Length: 126
Image 1 (tube, one colour):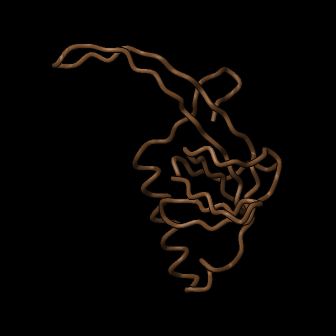
Image 2 (cartoon, rainbow, N blue to C red; image 1 turned 90 degrees about the vertical axis):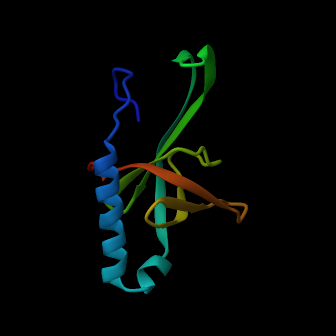
């Protein structure tokens, strides 16, 4: 997510792997029923950025453009950043499930939005 200066806070691959391992251990220690317990995901924020840039490589150079999307969710005491833009509204709560790599949000129309987790951190008090 972007901070007040417009820069994006990113965590390293090692931190992501460690948090995924921690989630897996928590699910295993809690038993099979933990994954089935209903969770609530609160949508903290969502952003979409368009980008353009040059790519240089062995076969030449070129221009790339695209869209970067990020949504921040608060589930329990953790804050998750997901890369997919699910059709959710900021400030609303949605039923959710979490596994090692993904968050599954149940949307109002009954469909499930599966989104890859790109960042995990402890949520700040609000």
